[in-house]
Figure 1: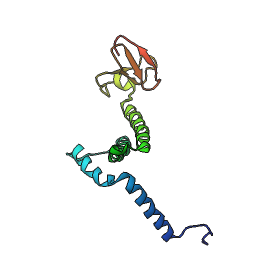
Figure 2: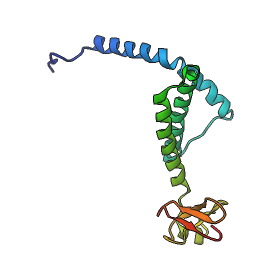
Figure 3: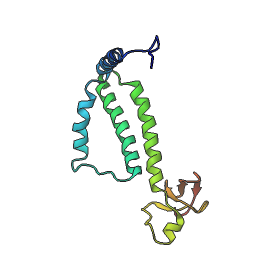
Figure 4: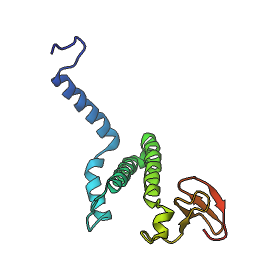
Length: 153
């Protein structure tokens, strides 16, 4: 393979990586060092992940958490706008992944294959998934995304 005229060599790539590290380190500080300490405090018993869904939720949690630590490192200087925006996105993805875990077929519930957690019930409109009670008279379906008035969700 012949190198192209504008292609960087390995040494140049490494120099760019060092420059990028130095630039970000001045903004983020030693976020990477603090992460382990805080995770150990949050999960003193450790954490066990088994399913793809658990790994997906943990990844979104971890990415959001990293943004919080970066923001915290810049709190005194007014925060870090990019981290705040990224946090919103990761939190929305985490919310979506969390909701997907709670979806369950009405037929599974009727056959006694699954227990429905408190505050949830089968959707009376689409009949396929659970709804989460949003207050005493309203419920939101995770599948058809319908907000319905109901006596008991």
